[in-house]
Image (cartoon, rainbow, N blue to C red):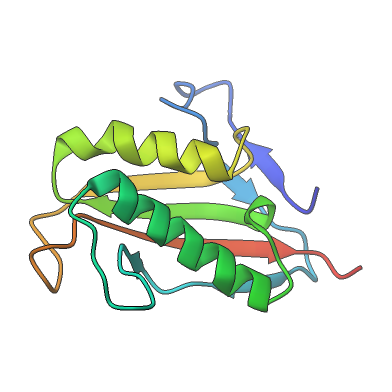
Length: 131
């Protein structure tokens, strides 16, 4: 695994499946995505927050694939939702794409995005050691 989980015993354990910090070894290739919104290639925006979250993760998968990476290379998730009720929905969708806790994660509740129909946005940082 190209990174080390950082969960000091002197602080409270993470509140969910993530780590407090991730150390990326020297020489790892890094990829930073822009925030991905729940919009399809045909400009369709589903009303449902779960469907929007799936599109966010599918977009991220495509970006990572273009860089020769997978979701298992993600070391940090930054997510933004427009309603506290969307937090568990986002979490369930994220769990379909990654498992374990070998990544850092932040979720912020925001008042909105560039268009009012958007409900969730996700960006990631990924790291992979050269093969």
